[in-house]
Length: 294
Image 1 (cartoon, rainbow, N blue to C red):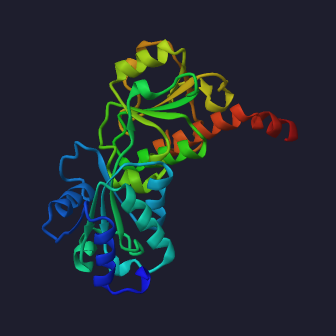
Image 2: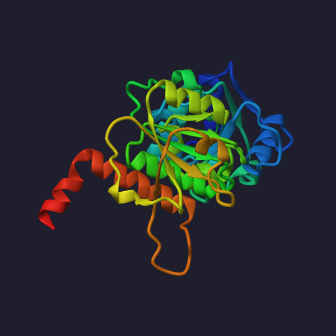
């Protein structure tokens, strides 16, 4: 049995099962250097790869049919039935399998409970023409956001509210940034994400008859007084500069979140979450139920 075998027996099993794509790799292997650059976000990443480790996170790759470029295994750490099952499933779809020593694996792992499983996966970025406007009624547009943690938080909130897609324009950080992956808690693999120029996004929204709602501290109306029915696009501006001028040059609606203390605005991740949940509650009909029962 694999789980009770020695390191040599485990490696022999994997090499025999996947001989065409399996190899032994050391700390100086190209794939290990590539992973270092990706997890530290300090090298170019034209293929938009992300590092995913551990049983739970690796399970999301399988759930959402994410392409696995390389599977890195520390077989000595694979000791449970769950880890073995995930390893087997990922090994079948991975383009490459690399068997590494425990010391080499520890150089790329950040999770103490990763169970010896690390996947280098393709981030599922979408093209604008892949979004079906007829089936995508609620879209959030992130205009110039700079902080990866905020983007990840919004992605997670989009998942929680069943928002149909996220459009990113005036990009200031890589979508593959490790903090986006961590703060989104894997929701980045589920919610469709598009990176595109502002003008192209604006045209697409107008051509497909979306109401465009700006979140603006100077707006006259509060966010909870707005009609969120129909096809809507909620625009969230950057942490420092707000929403770009080009969005004010087209027909839009503006809403604000009331501030009762000394600060004049909320963190964009929190603000987006309030907006998205308000829209989701409104569209579900629960807002009417709450009002009647108040």
